Image 1 (spheres, helix red, strand yellow):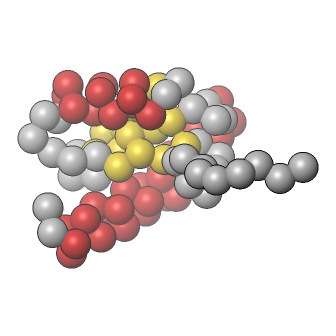
Image 2 (tube, rainbow, N blue to C red):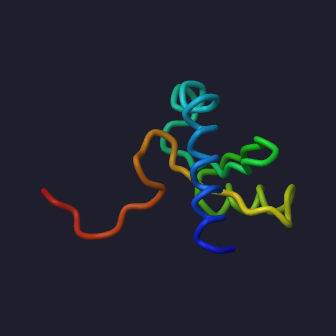
Length: 83
């Protein structure tokens, strides 16, 4: 997948999350992970990013998905914690 295709995947998945999933998922699955397959609009929940992405791959093995942590700006946070 080239950078343009990756950018389109991310944009499409984020748009689906904002328009169709955010309100529902943040009310019932806060802090879980959601993998979104933007062509079909299917989404897959998991307590870990691996669970969500594995479920997406089982259903759509030939299509990439994008993972988001419900209620967070990023799926994963790296670096030191501040007190």
